[in-house]
Image (cartoon, rainbow, N blue to C red; front, side, top):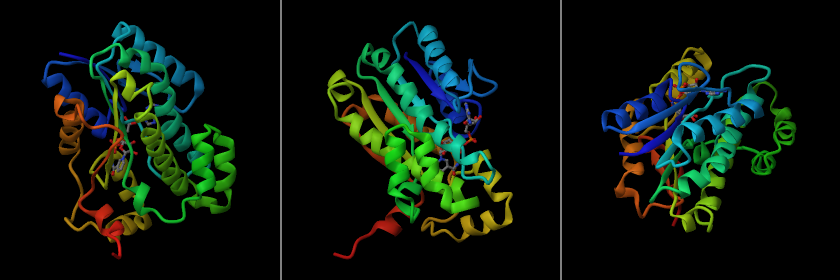
Length: 261
Ligand code: NAD
């Protein structure tokens, strides 16, 4: 049995992953802004530092895996774009920087980062914002999103998911990650029925946009089914999975990306 860190453990897909890991007999260290083993606000440098250190202490310096599911959706609000950039990008890369030695100390550790199919289906996300996030410069990223006005959180969401996915691909294949035996991968869900989606559906304009979005299979995804994919990506079946982005989105990514060959 292993020891796993799960961020976003209090709700939605993170909570569903915790449920499955605990049922399988694993030890889970949950991180969230409330109702978690480690309570920390991942939108601040202090919160990220506290979360990283507290998990390492509880794990005794060895982690068999980590699931980075804490995240904010593209809701409106004056400070929302910053919160999205901090939680969805820095809340993943800074924690994984800190946990990498503990993951390397385990045999064949596995990491699953929550991306989104927004990475391939959202148009007009400014490259400058993505590059700034990859440089971990949130003010610069926000500067390049200012022209979007009240739509800035939507594009901050797209930029945060593209940046963290690019980071996964770049890091996964390096000596520090693959070379240390750590399998680093991402999952890219479509619209999944969690409190995050429910919050978006509560706004009529947003609900209309979500329901008009092409989903070939139809409907919304189920959080527990997504958790089953994550658990597979943490299992021995994923020993040869490295730097991959697994889309579980009812076909939207395929619909948008099928080429003209
Ligand atoms: P959710 O809202 O149910 O859960 C997200 C969790 O993150 C919550 O428990 C919340 O408290 C935590 N969190 C938010 N801000 C935090 C902070 N500052 N510090 C610590 N914890 C914080 O959402 P979900 O749908 O389960 O989302 C999980 C991941 O999947 C997110 O990264 C989200 O972007 C991604 N995703 C979701 C969907 C969807 O349709 N639900 C689609 C694509 C990607």
